[in-house]
Length: 437
Ligand SMILES: *[C@@H]1O[C@H](CO)[C@@H](O)[C@H](O)[C@H]1NC(C)=O
Ligand SMILES: *[C@@H]1O[C@H](CO)[C@@H](O)[C@H](O)[C@H]1NC(C)=O
Ligand SMILES: *[C@@H]1O[C@H](CO)[C@@H](O)[C@H](O)[C@H]1NC(C)=O
Ligand SMILES: [Zn+2]
Image (cartoon, rainbow, N blue to C red; front, side, top):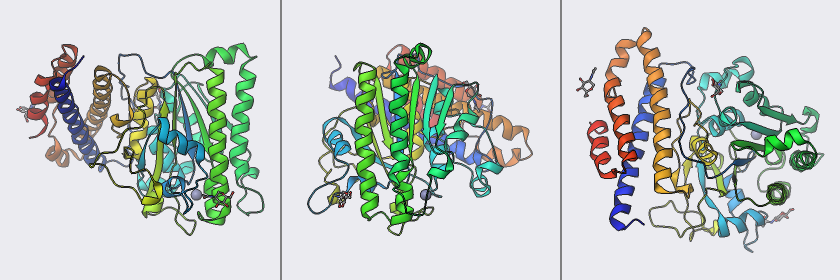
């Protein structure tokens, strides 16, 4: 339908919208410096008017899985992640998700699921002492069911208003760092619970009805690899065995879910980790082994494999993925990706920008998604500006008021009318004159 000329216009428009993101993200973070917490309340959620490509999302996070351990293979070109490996080759989009320091679990999950980077002083104090409630993909979902560790799940249920985020956790006695019992129990517990849950739903009419609605999330928190890495180190047989168990479990979960939904092709899957792990079994700092985590997405709304281009980051030879397009993201970008797949608002305090490379939707749909992500950031920026102006630091703030209210209103109105009228060229110069001052 679109010829080359239109494609060029589209890609220019997307470039410009991206620069809008970067610009606003920069402004948001500048204003952030003057705040104790990046979390601001009472921001209106923004959503795209179009029907989402997926009705449900399965988020699986292998705690402490570094990109290299998952994607690399041994000298014999064998890998223990054979299922995920196969789907990367056949039907996935993949890349490295870059985390920030400190590479700890709680900030990692907050970044993935809420799209925000926690304030370092809050991290130092520990979440329990600083129970700020925050918006998240789970809160914006219609329902979220989650399984995993009591250290992670409760904070997302706590931030969610109403009773729509369900958690099922093992007792802390199951977590055993002594190395006497296999760490894979933490993961097999989760896989077993999901299986029981889906079986139960077949006979529970109320649950079944909920499960057949759209905008729902399943979250599988898989802690085994983190424990295996701390106890046995990432090059150990135990860590590799745990990768095998996670890979096989994911294969099984996908089969069960597809069967449950009768292969309706409306499920999106995202697999990633919160942080990596050094060779000596630690994390927290900024080494590549700690900050590089795998991101793989497949299913409804996600593009299939594409040949790589020269502009992409190169991967270690042992990954043997040089032929496939690699789409790296910042960890916070996973939140808008997940929100866009199931058509819910991006969490209001998110600083993530939609990694459009992962999506397979029409250009119109993509521009709506990007526009709602931009509006979400503008709303956040405005709220922060309001608070800053009301505060005592308004004299510092003045230096940064590049994007004032009237300018911003004009900008968003113009983008909206351009998208509506499919006048993509005009929007380009508008964006440029407003933003690149
Ligand atoms: C959770 O979502 C609801 C509905 O969008 C919103 O009103 C509420 O403020 C959110 N919770 C937090 C902590 O932001
Ligand atoms: C797969 O895991 C086993 C342990 O279960 C390990 O001995 C083997 O080296 C691993 N293979 C690869 C390719 O990592
Ligand atoms: C907003 O910024 C634009 C351009 O930077 C300027 O022309 C306009 O006067 C400003 N408006 C207000 C209310 O400060
Ligand atoms: Zn850990």
